[in-house]
Image (cartoon, rainbow, N blue to C red):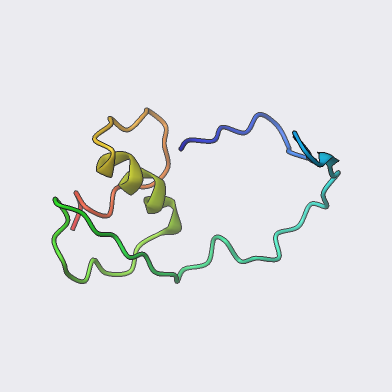
Length: 83
């Protein structure tokens, strides 16, 4: 899944619940912190410690697992191909 933002997202529209937002400009969840973890399993995945990596590496990893090419300008790098 690749999500491209164009400008600032103030809200969204849900097919059942209708408009949601506007949302405040703050990020209380710590989504870009230095620590997290990922469990990845599959036929072409070798078990092991892949070291501390950036959260931006999750999407390129999923794209690689799907067998797709990484689009130009995508942040991060696959956890699998850069061990």
